[in-house]
Length: 86
Image 1 (cartoon, rainbow, N blue to C red):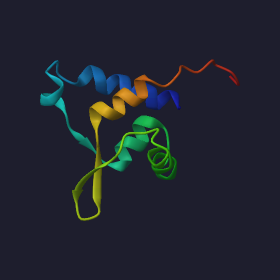
Image 2: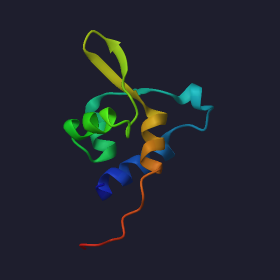
Image 3: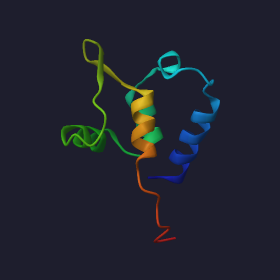
C-alpha cells in the first residue's frame, strides 16, 4: 500500500466529524477507493471476487459505490509495512 494512500486515509478520517457511523456514512466511487487503497480497479475487483474486499453497492444501472466505513475498516485491518525495500 502506498504511503500517500495511507496518509490520505488518515487525513480523511480526521476530517470526518465525530458523529455516529450511520450519520457520517457516504459512498465512494471507484476513483476514490483506488486512491485510498493504493490499488487499481482490477485488483479491487479480484479482491472482491475472493471475498477479501468489501462488496460494492449498486447505485443505478452500471454505477456502483463502496461504503466509506467498510473501506476504512479494510484499510485499518491491513498489516503495517515492515519497511523492507526502502
